[in-house]
Image (tube, rainbow, N blue to C red; front, side, top):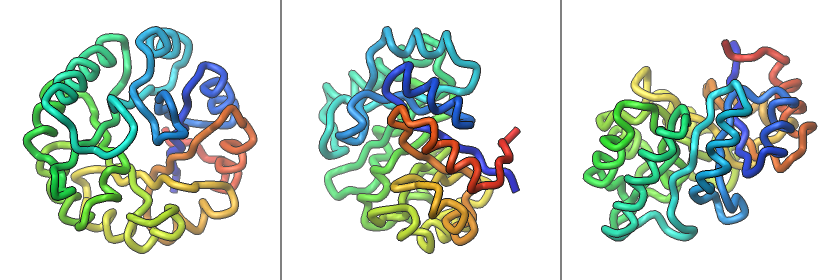
Length: 222
């Protein structure tokens, strides 16, 4: 079984290190220490021009919760369109309502702005009171992927919940395991959860991604 490795990066140096380590896809963010926010337009343009792997762009107007004002949603909609215009393969975003469930109306707006390009719902799902119900909502909306730690501090700790999410999602969307993904835990995480994609922060450390690739047997997703 081949496993796709997605690396979270916030600079060109990060991206080059991730690719040298064996990453298959990049998630470009700003401010990863705060969980990631929307990167600068110039960085998106340059990175997309310099790499041959798919690039997903984080769309998040600020750190903090995932309940957004009308003005923030309007900004996100514009950022989605811009990122895709600049050559991004897809976008990564997430919106919750005041009760911390998936805000389906807001998500429809953002999916509309994406125009059918792939949208990943990020770890906002781990803050919902019912992750399996959230999977149902996102599948019905047409979201391509969900990034999650299984509502636990790390994906390894949330492996059982991730397995339930994978089963619930079926072929409707992909569940991507993220949160503390490292070489020593990734093989067991994949085995226990059944995920086919994992997400790890690169941090400019080629060895981190290379270690994950090695632990997964060195096979690249085609």
